[in-house]
Amino acid sequence: MNRLYLAAATLNVWVLVLVLVAAFTVQLVLWELPCPLCVMQRVALMLVALGPLHILLRAQGRGVLASRDAAVGNGIAILAALLGVIASGRQMLLHILPGDAGFGAPVLGLHLYTWCLIAFGCQIAAGAVMLLAAAWIDDKPVAWRPTRVTALAFAAIVAGNLLSVIAEAGLNWDLPSDPVRYLLFG
Amino acid sequence: VVYAIFMLLVLLTLAAAWRGYALELPLFLITAAWVLVHLVLDMTTPLSLSF
Image 1 (tube, chains in turn brown, orange):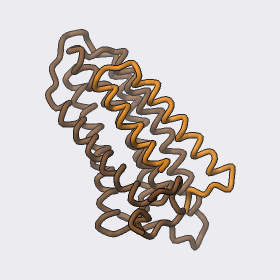
Image 2 (spheres, chains in turn brown, cyan; image 1 turned 30 degrees about the vertical axis):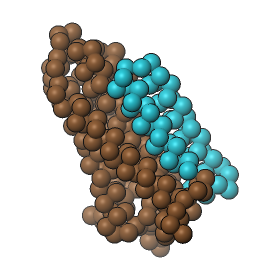
Image 3 (tube, chains in turn orange, red; image 1 turned 180 degrees about the horizontal axis):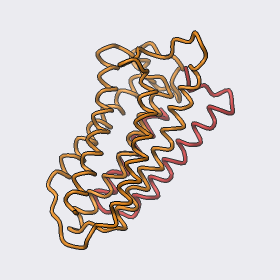
Image 4 (spheres, chains in turn brown, purple; image 1 turned 120 degrees about the vertical axis):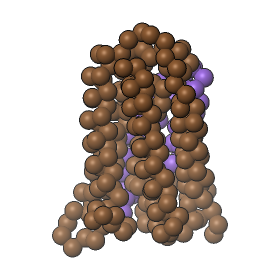
């Protein structure tokens, strides 16, 4: 059960990394610069990933998967997903009036912030299921090799977004509400 | 710059978790609280995050 639990936590992180990669791809390939609320949703996705990463890294450090670490990790993920719900829900409500085309190009019929809202809702449900599943964790030692590469992939996508947002905002404290160019480059 | 600071805090929290430092949870809570304040300010003041 412990290995299955760690596999689920790893999968959770990778799904979040892939969502962040997809958003980054839209930004770089379609030249759609993220607005401030879009960046806030990315930050919320990153904060969510810290939850399952807490579980993985604690299990790696101690060699044991503890129920306490599972509880803390899922608490982190659920709290952060609630922040994501606020950001994406806010942006969705801003574009809910009839005739409003929304912000950015839709993907599979929905805008990215709508997909984000769905993703955060699914994350909250997944966190609740993981909390329930913690009842079956035992104290046996467990080795889980994918932790390191998972954490490194997450760090890489966060670092990429960090550089991107610096390029986008330049030396300004905040981003323009409808960014059209990278302010660092004039 | 504020978004870069958020992401830097995420990286610092990850580093703390990796090293097993007790600073991990306070860092997460500070970041989450700051993000919440930033979002609430957008809804209650002329600060415009949104488009």
